[in-house]
Length: 139
Image (cartoon, rainbow, N blue to C red; front, side, top):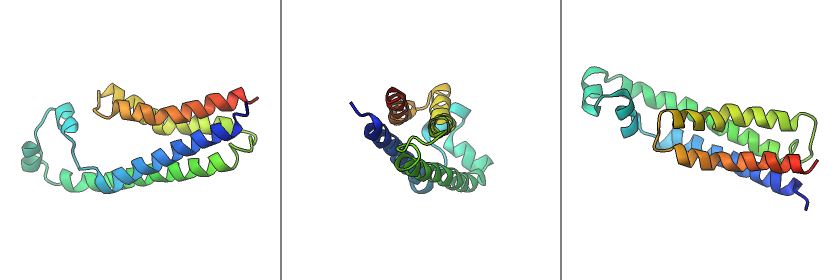
């Protein structure tokens, strides 16, 4: 079986999932989720009363973070259709590094903080991991 197109398609899916995640952070993510308040041990009202600027600052932080996530997704999508598909030198290594430092690290941290989103992020990591496994099988 030729795994080359499948591994590239799975990597493309991983890029699309990152693009969607970036868009979520830019346009939809609230400043503080209920799990954020629970983790830091406070209430929404306490933040409003004592740190009102935090609620103005955090959305801007998430715009920047979302932009980086979206950009990573765009680059992964491009790589999936070019160097990864063509098996150019270092494509595998770069893809491993990019996956580990992007969605991999985000998933790991979400498990560490017991986030409500940890399982969704793990599912988002699977296409990346499967693409890498299939890439290696096609040697």
